[in-house]
Amino acid sequence: MTKVSFLGACNEVGSSAVLVDTGTEKMVMDYGVKLQEDPVQYPEEVKGKLNSILLTHTHLDHSGAVPYLYHQGQKCPLIGQDITLPFSRMLWYDSIKIAKMEGKRIKFNGHDIRRSVKKFRGVEYRKPFKIGKSRVTSYDAGHIPGSSMFFIENGGKKILYTGDFNTDDTRLLAGCDWDIPKPDVLVTESTYAGKEHPNREEEERKLIEVVNDTIANDGIAVIACFAIARSQEVMLILDNYGIKAPVYVEGMARQATDIVNDHPHLQNEYNSLKRAMKNMNVKYIQHHMQRKKIAKDPCVVITTSGMLSGGAVVYYLKRLHNREDCSLIMTGFQVPDTEGDNLLKTGRYVHEELDFKVKMNVNKFDFSAHSSDSDIISFIQKLSPKKVFCVHGERTDTFANDLNSKGFDAVSPKKGEEFTF
Ligand SMILES: [Zn+2]
Ligand SMILES: [Zn+2]
Image (cartoon, rainbow, N blue to C red; front, side, top):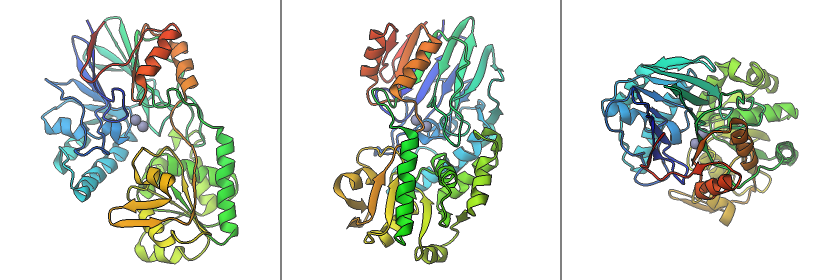
């Protein structure tokens, strides 16, 4: 008898966690947080000893509460792709810093991060490994570098958990692996359920047009990006279209870029990021004086955070918000009520003590790293599982109904709900 329990990300995005009890082993897949909530939202508590923690990828809604498991005394290995470790270490320490700044309580400390790092075991795609009597295989999820789906087999029962996945190729990454054995149970993310992406090439062309127009007007193009994957994707786009202006990388995007460059085999085209950066002579902004200097001449600045909620982008907004010749470019979905979302709705930037009208040319493009509605459905059709659980989405109820009307047996589980098969 295998039990699957849903500890988080039920009918929402944030604090992903799926507990699998095969009867011989207990494993949790992801253990994330929802940082936007105050207090920070955690998944349901894990009771008893775990045999393993499987981490699909580093985004905090999947990894953010892992150190809390070790804080509570778990001693099991933490398993993921090698690159997930340096990414996670960076994000865990950053989440402690942000929580402190915002006066939010976080349930772990530096000591727990060091414990998590010690317990980490790197695995490779498509190379099965054993956890007790269970056989586990990681498949490329195509979402960010190192993102994985986990396939667990035990006593003839098979489960696949997608984590976040993207079926489409991007410049940085190849789309997800489709050559996966048929599972009995599929747990799928549903971020873009009911939604399709705009044409990617068209989005790229529009981005380049804004950048070129800004440079031609002697302005500065500030591109707000998530540190991991999006910043690197944007560099590859700029290089592909032969951008002539100086390109600078700011904030946490620098560290994330170094980590991606250290893992050239994970890129869609081996080592393409390093080549693009060399080609454009990309420079990192290392200190405040350099910021002041570069903000005088036309250039492109790639900076965190992607939703304008902190990081170096705040400096550029403070300094450039009155300049109509400059542009601010957002490169992904803006979570409701974040600074980025509010700016799009009101034209004002409101953050901590700051509150001003932004006269820069403000743009938003969709370079999503998630599968669209039709892509998720094609993926499910290909795998034809006996049962589908829809998690990690704002409309998992509607999505499950939609899948049922297409002949699948789909459920949108509630937080804490347990299923046996
Ligand atoms: Zn993700
Ligand atoms: Zn996610």
